[in-house]
View 1 (cartoon, one colour):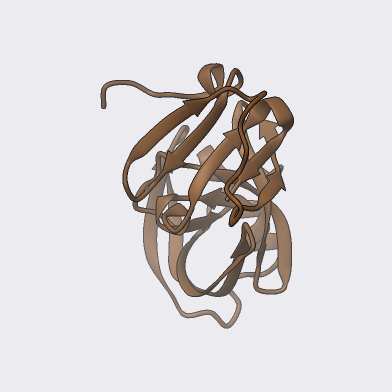
View 2 (tube, one colour):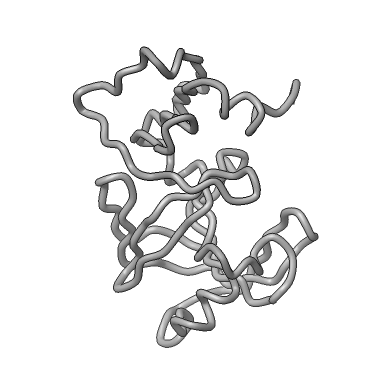
Length: 166
């Protein structure tokens, strides 16, 4: 890793990120137009991280976009797992996840459905945080969305206009 591109850059321009091709392009926010096939979603900046609304099974919530978690799909935070009883009648196995604040015990299993950026995913692998500590104990968001779930999209971060393009 040569460095991290984050909020300081993203807040000044439109950033187009192709997760599959590992390519990034920077654009002038006054002149950028989303491709006709694209879709804008409102973005909330929380702790200098982009968050968008997404649906999972019969629930909806705010999710942090985590482009640095290239191998992950979705990690549901501790409060969401507990509040929605997400482990009840779900086949899972013990696993772990790490981030700011250290490693936490999780269970991995399948979400029947996940909706993001106008796209429906079915039968995706997900992690369910079991500990109320670290990066997955933030009750403001329901979870993190990682690179495996973001791969079908070219993401367009338009912080100056408060939106994220898919």
